[in-house]
Image (cartoon, one colour):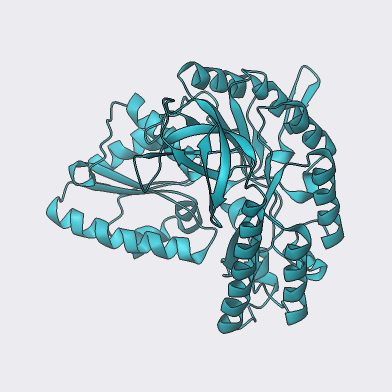
Length: 427
């Protein structure tokens, strides 16, 4: 989401007459787009600001701004704590950046962290300033109303609201015409997408189908799905359209029904497993990834073991795994005590990571001998003698360079693998 927001910001600033540079030392203004989901992310921003301070010592006219969720959460407090900052703008205030810049140029600090009930930036064509020209993000909605106990997003991104269907499909069409061959539809919970016009409602499944029909050569991905809202209709839509990738990111967070209740996730362990069964039944080749939080408030060793057993039962293809860190102003901070010792959190997280590495290895091992359609994204990070791309299951595939070019599809037979990568050759 932050990457997509940065492209929106770039578009707004370009329209106002500003240009961009890839050399930070050439910049007259620098914006840091921030995340507040974990304390670690905020600490990285603080460290980055130390570097900005050194740049400002060399150029007193340099303007430093903070955007996004951390800016929204801490607001004017940041101006007191981080003297290097000149400007603060929340996720719904990006249209106001030209005015805020003018205020800074007049010698004043500038802040706008007002949240909106209707801002979606639907009319703004994002600047794909750091794109490979093949894959792009399309933001289809903003905000969140799930209020998971550990999560600060509803407080820093505001009420959930969806973009209109027409603007989304038009953006996909324009991207395809410009040579892009893959789009990822983004939202905090894409499954709750809803747009109504003239009494006709479009759900996320309906939107996904409309985007898939833009062109059969345009691959469609999406993130992120919430288990409580993942419908059979959505899975059936994926099964009907070959260009909708067979990959679903379905964060579970914990395998314990008791902890899921504490987290206010809105489903039980069995309900999550029922959704997994529906995916396996309707879309057998679908890759399933997830998120885990180790050491949430009151998590016992038995709760942790239930997470381990769920992992073994599902066999996730890959996962994002974190230890719990309390975020101020969340339900968990107000209701619970962060009472799992740090060392216990670390050990549980290590066990989750170790198991997932085994599961990812096993998942990739099953792909040896199979042939996948791969969209070439560019050269491998390790060697220009190899191309890199992803298959429909969102797995990275590396193979020797052929006469094909980035942006083209090739069939690749998998010969070997690591826990993170499939390696093969074009057939």
